[in-house]
Amino acid sequence: MHPDGERGETGQGFQPVRDGRGASILGPRNLPLERQNPDLLASPYTDSGTVPNLKFSFAAARNRLSKGGWAREVTTRELPVATAIAGVNMRLEPGAIRELHWHKEAEWQYMLVGSARVTAVDPQGRNFIADVHEGDLWYFPAGIPHSIQALQDGCEFLLVFDNGEFSENETFLLTDWLAHTPRDALAKNFGVPESAFAGLPTDLEHERYIFPGKVPGPIDADAVASPAGTAPLDYTYRLSAQPPIRVAGGQVRIADSTNFRVATTIAAALVEVEPGAMRELHWHPNADEWQYYISGNARMTVFASGGRARTFDYAAGDVGYVPFAMGHYVQNTGDGVLRFLEIFRSDRFADLSLRQWLGLVPPELVREHLDGAPDVIVALSTTRPIIVR
Ligand code: MN
Ligand code: MN
Image (cartoon, rainbow, N blue to C red; front, side, top):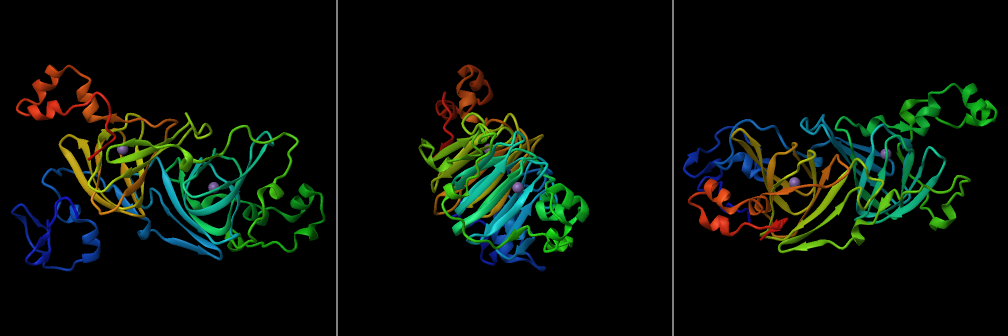
């Protein structure tokens, strides 16, 4: 049940009417979309001024289909405010391969379902191979070549890049490069006759990108011994194995460069909010926040200063965004557990809690500000609640 209960439901159905304001819709309408966005259809009276759009759903993104899987992206083209981070939702069938490639951006990943084998090689010639399972992360620094192959059950995952302009369609692909290099240069490079490349595609349209493959065997059989050794830092991180920070109303797991050392440009928190609970009012002092909703339903109001604020509703598969330093809360408005990722282009996770802030300055000073609200002053805290019930 939405916290505002029957708001919008009048004798005339679901209408932009609340608190004696508004009127029914007479013209064309998209009722399913309006039902997903009740706080846009009839915004709370506390919303005010001009705030950019802070929501885009993967369901509204173009899905690029290949044999063996698909990929869809939310970038600045879809969500213009999201300049810091771009996201890609990708699916691979059992054994399917995301082609060997690299790109200008660092890549962070959260495994939603299933498992995959990843490889990487660093500039010192040190290599890396690992299997990644549900709830686990990987991070490949900018320019590091890598591959992804689904294991026996297939997989679906979320990729995050540290630049909102990123495009999944413009990565540096192995077959694309080979198709755009003269055959005599390829022959010289690999020390084979030109005829050795006769079976390769020559047309850009035939790049592999995502393509079917054989499910790989045990990881030990796939490992290649490099004379330079293996990569010194683990490119993967078992977030699912991390003991969560448990609080009344939910739990949080944080992964940044303090525990996932290689991840120097992306920090993240996996937040789980129980029904009826809320991620507290807070802000982040270091970066924009890019959100991905994994399950449940949420409502967020973003306070943009200068009397401006806007409220949005989110469901599984949606992307949310909070520009740098803006205050916000995320409320569980559904019947189940709300799970979402808070992601930042930063080497560390950092936030400031409203309740803790006010609890750590002289009480008399707070009293001068909140004159007439003595119960609020009693409820302040010297520690951060993170999630409140
Ligand atoms: Mn990549
Ligand atoms: Mn936040």
